[in-house]
Image 1 (cartoon, one colour):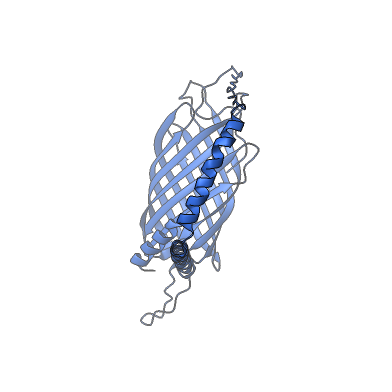
Image 2: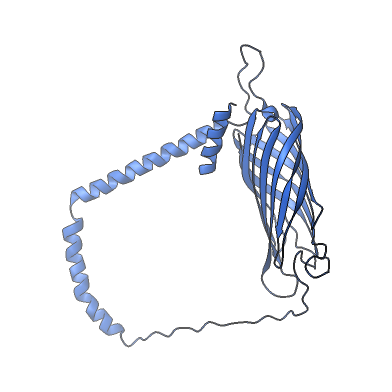
Length: 301
């Protein structure tokens, strides 16, 4: 698809994992104190003896309100104007929704195009599109007390591109207290596709990654490799592996399938994540090993 059409489609679309962690939590200080303090809020006590007086005082007010509503809201013009405004807003919303559905259904990298009269080659370029964009959200079927959400965005021309991922983890605490520990992992990469074909794309990525944990925030270099290939019709197979070696260690891998329905994409597969803070918090290495099935949805134009 043309670059302007890809940009417009992505803009319209934009308008509308894991088992419990190991015993030692990544990026958190070791603590032997497992006790927790409990606090109780004071409950306000209301006075009931003024209730009867308030009811008596409200009766004249209710009568005045009734008269006021009869004089102000009884006109037919006000009701007609309100109804007309609601109809206009409803029509605009319906037109916008129908337009969005049309754009998603009739666009996307995996639609079969009409043959080009000049070259007798299909206009559908799939993984060799001159410009493509992808965005979406995916999570996992978490273990007990754990949850994760991954948001991603990428934009590529034929060879080079940029990509960003934000993974938000909520894991049960490991020190005996109630609650959760929150970890936020962010990646920002530039990519180069060293193999480009309408049915496959293999890319190398490099950039930075950050890990925000309960007691530390770390930043390090990040590299990755990923592959996408057509499997059957609109069904793709996808795989990706990412590594951050220092000052903390992160190994993240996914393998799964992607179903392209026009510009709308459904994803599912398996994801594994290993984190090690290498003792930067308190001299003790804290690790987390997470893995599980993931499901997601997004757009690709």
